[in-house]
Length: 215
Image (cartoon, rainbow, N blue to C red; front, side, top):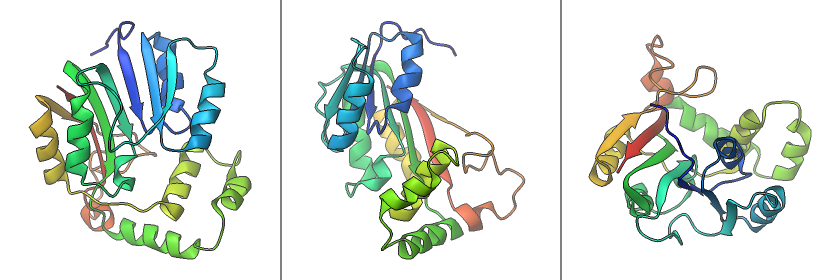
């Protein structure tokens, strides 16, 4: 269902370089707030979006959001919460807190992985003494930004893993509707994308857990 977001307050939790804010601005939302814990990222985004009066960039913590209760029409948490040490269930509750009644929440975390998790572990052990800046300099501009982000996440980011059943239960406790997002072929690792792969659970476990939820 297509939504008119011109009157929406949107909050991007762990916004990174602001790619989702950049896309959403094309639809003229009332306000976009991007929040990240990295000071350099926040400074870069403030410069990048300086000409947009409806964009605010904040320095903050995804485990304790600065926003008021029921203040946002749409909250985004894309590939962030699995990097935090806090229980995913608590993080979902905290993000649900700021969503307005009938508002929306999009979330992506990695699921309980199979062999894929061993590859991530190998990547971290293989790259332990290579500065992340060196890897970025080699591959930036040579592969897609999304692929590069995935490589850096796998090589340097620690993950907590969540099984699909628990994830859906936690979301159902905070939202009236949850809809699984099947993902995109060639980019995402979900059962829907790999529906013909009889070894999916052995290779990827729960795969990517992506959901659009309504309060």
